[in-house]
Length: 383
Image (cartoon, rainbow, N blue to C red; front, top):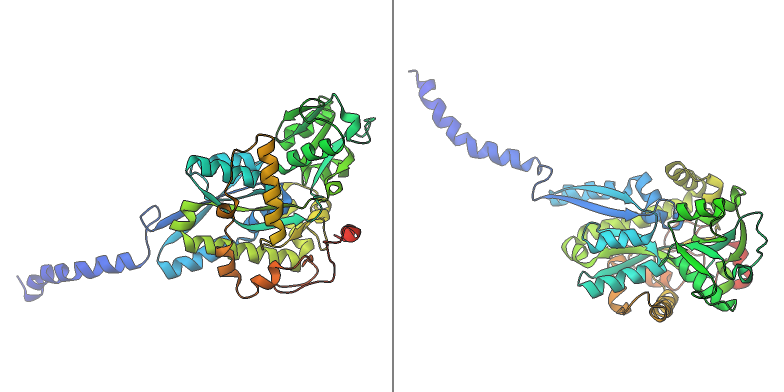
């Protein structure tokens, strides 16, 4: 045996630990302990949640930020997006620990928080996506040939809505304001938006109460007419993001990157409103004109992630209302709303921006203002 042959086994043994170390440093294998899957629940057609859903997904900002995070943490991340028609389904999956982050309307957010607190699987509201200061994101429509011109004309008739949704809340409050008993004077049919639209078309319901973009879409397609606009209530309506508390505690860095990505998508929507509307239209099949009506510059929805004091007041009142009609048992609202992660990623401009009541859409950036004060009902048409 030659000298080289005698040394070969020993050399291989010495190199084995180095080879293993080099293999490990190349990155963790998918599915291992250092692999994180993030499940995001969203409503693709609820277009005032697009900065945490449809638009964010199409832009890929969250995935890009997680890739950069992985280079720092030596972990791999992947995102699974799950699309649902209403917030109720997202809540059900979140309480089963199958969804980590989600977006939904104000009433579903409160129901989410209440049920999570009751079940021991706490959730937290992290940010706002889109809002309207007067409640104009929820509407009641009837068939074009209907004789109904207002809510009073719906007495004794069936109305389709998604029970527990923001649109349901608007319907109940609007019926009461019109002198109708929401339980005795009408028959509320609990249906997903698409099912309700079909029911309206077939004539099996007299009206449809829904959130954006369903009423606007049906009116745009000449399949419905507007008989009640939620702005008549004068009560702000909003959508926001919610997460499992356990996920936020276990994955604070991922939570931060999601919020940064939402801010990125919000800035993109402000800077490129038409292109953003086209992206959402391409992803959902909605007409771009309908998307732009809500999401365009000066649109019906204002996109601002900050959780404003006025929103806390509205959510407090909404909590009392939902409790009065039996939709929730109890909710520790202060424990549910947590804007600390958003403050952390937003930076020094948060306190300035949280105090603003203006629509930032016509201008660029997170810390700028415009001269359209949407708190003035007389100027609501400028949204």
